[in-house]
Amino acid sequence: MKKSILVLICIVNSLLGYSQSDSKPVVGVAEFTKEVDSKYAGAVAEKVVQVVTNTKRFVVVDRTSYDKVKQELEFQKTEAFLDSKNTAKQDVALAAQYMILGHIVKMSIFAMKNPDGSINGYKASSAFTLKVNEVETGKTTEAESFQTDVSPLMLSPESAVNEALKSIEPKMTAYFTKTFPLSTKISKVLTTKKDAALTVLIAGGKSFGFKEGDKLLVLKNEMIDGKPYPSEIGEIKIIKIAGEDFSECSVSEGGKEILSRFNAAEKLTCNLILK
Image (cartoon, rainbow, N blue to C red; front, side, top):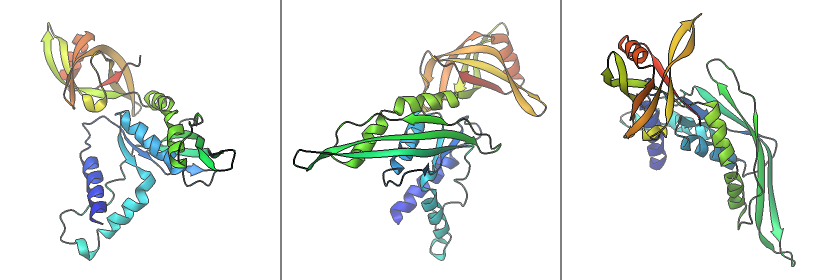
């Protein structure tokens, strides 16, 4: 139980560490629905959580195990925890802006046999669909289909399923990269010349997966009929990764407008240009 509590505290602390100044969206991965009754189906959702986390574009909430987390939160409200400083706050884990919904269409596991009938190993393949639901509006993207390759011969069904799912990682990474363009903001103007910004500091460094040479469009966000209307005002290029949380950028285009709007405390968004 102590181990479970520590895990929960880590989850809660990571979510409390997320602030409005952090432009990473909070994404939850819901328990997948399925057309097949397989004890290995959970591996698909686990792989999706892994891929989403590795993109470094999101604060990820794994909802596939949320029932267990919720049970622990309720247990911590009992008398045994009344004086504990480690009691997790109720509903802290409910802040997902987007939910990733999955449906498993196929989970095939083949036992490969020797001529004498003994099992020589296992192969596996899987097919599933993913779509993204925007929690506030209820809007959902079109479902994207994924089909793994057949795994190489493995010693166990679990390892065969995991190897099959590895084959689909590049396609899933490309899907999430396209669905969620990496976005951040200008935190500080570092240098200027003749009323134009020359270098700026943006929020996000190694923790965002940024690298030197990346280019970003700078957008202003005008509110029209109560909705944000972004329009391009410039372009910047990352010249130095300044740790986990910041990157230094040179201004390639739009230096004057970037400086004037930044000084006017307008919200400027920087979107990574996909290569």
